[in-house]
Amino acid sequence: MLIKPVVSVIIPSYNRIKYIEETISSVESQCYRDYEIIVVDDGSTDGSFQLLERFKREGRIKLYTHLNGKNLGQSASINRGIDYSTGSYIAILDSDDYFSLDKLARQVYFLERNPSFGMVYGQGQAVDADGRFLFTIPDDNHIETNDPNNLLLDCYMALPGGSLIRRSVFDKVGRFEESFRAGQDHDMALRIMEEFKVAFLPEIVFYYRKHGDSISTNGLETRWRTGIQVLERAKSRYPYRKSTIRKRKAVINYRLGQVHWCRGQKLRSLGFLIMSGTLDPVRASKVLLGSKS
Image 1 (cartoon, helix red, strand yellow):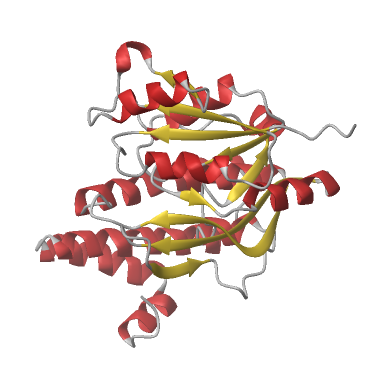
Image 2: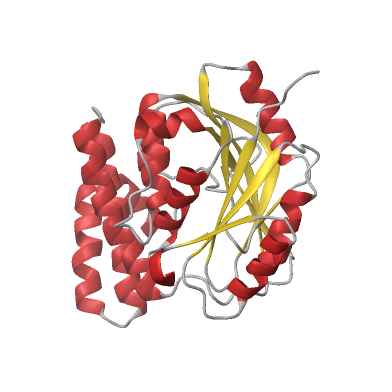
């Protein structure tokens, strides 16, 4: 009898009572049946933890929390899930997103037949709170170059739900950075690509929601300031091209300028925008001409 590898599906959950059951059901509906569902509750206060306790009693999930039910952030929750996982492969699914029916089957099939790859990822389809289609990332024409420079400049992967990762990869690159409350996916994707080959399969593998709880301007500022830390750490690990580092700094400054402009902080915004233009005048001219956002 052929023994299939187990996939550990890790779901970090925080106050997602409206969506968490659909998220879990999308794993239970997979064509691939050799999986475990590990949910790590991050101090929920909306009743979702009590719902998850019921799912645990029913044998649907394995449920963990942080000490004293503390809220430690998504990275800490994912790391705790990895620590308790038993599978050969790790899939991570946000608690308001959901998998396509053959997500695990297709990605396990690829990695089993391509042992030189550490990770495979597919496309994510953004939907609104009611499940209506918004956009797809990356698009059908995307080609994976396996050049970390491209990934540093533009986090084009639909993460984390779009990927399947060998558990052994985390033994090499480490866990998610728990001090980050944003940008941890980009940081991890870079660390993986710096050490392993990754593959792209052009098919929708999960759906992620854009809804009223999406990131505020405060959250966006956190994301882009974290982006500075991600960039500095990347520079210390890998020989990125100087042009890539300069262009990434330009992107971060531009996005921070946008955040402050939206807050009405025009003078502060202009400082970031001028710095962005100085670092990457070609991109700045395209933005001014309306050919790039």
